[in-house]
Image 1 (tube, rainbow, N blue to C red):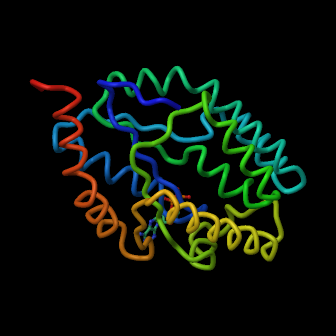
Image 2: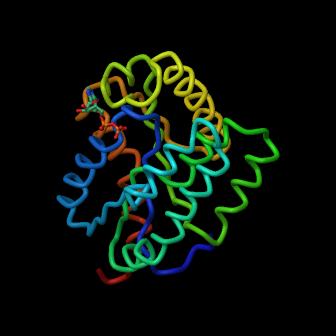
Amino acid sequence: MRRRPNRGVLIALEGIDGSGKSTLQRRLVRRWRNRTWTVATRREPSDPDLGRLAQQLAPKDPWASAMVFTLDRLIARPKLDTALAEHDVVLTDRTFYSTLAYQGSAVPAGVAARMHRLQRGVTVVPDRVVLLHLSPDEALKRVGARGRGRAPLERRRTLSRVDRAYRRLALEHRWLVVDGSRPAEFVAAEVDSALAPWIERRRARARPGR
Ligand code: ADP
């Protein structure tokens, strides 16, 4: 997970299902392209079939599920490296931190630590992470039918556990935490003003003369 010089920055959006990540991604891309930055987008899981398999495994076998998500990440790595080499910014909807929040919070701490270590060499650590915070109740209201496959109570319990895990990760890694309950354009404006000056400095340093 070593950082290479002269590459674009990797910005990650994290948060529970329905917190507004893909909405924020679309709005940030618009704002950042208006700044004349080159921006690539991606999401995890990259392969829908592997994603489905990982999601099916998650309730009964979080370790196996985490390994399928990790395999997906490994397969997607060359494309991520290319995107970083060719753009100022790569904006990703989810990273390995999602695996740590969802599956890592369902296993004992030692197993979660191993899950984390396994990400080394597989993927790239994002330069900045934005946690979109929204209560599980609000998120469930927003996604409605997307909670298919699990009983509502079970789903709510899972999201609460994942929400706690995300908040711990945010503290530990100093993520930018934003309140996802406000109108989407407010959220995008807050993230833009928090990150844009930093990205601009990094961009000037990485690609002098541009
Ligand atoms: P995620 O990608 O985190 O699962 P989405 O961006 O798909 O979440 O948003 C889930 C639902 O909530 C969508 O119907 C979206 O239009 C809506 N939504 C997203 N952000 C907001 C917001 N700030 N306020 C109200 N509704 C929102």
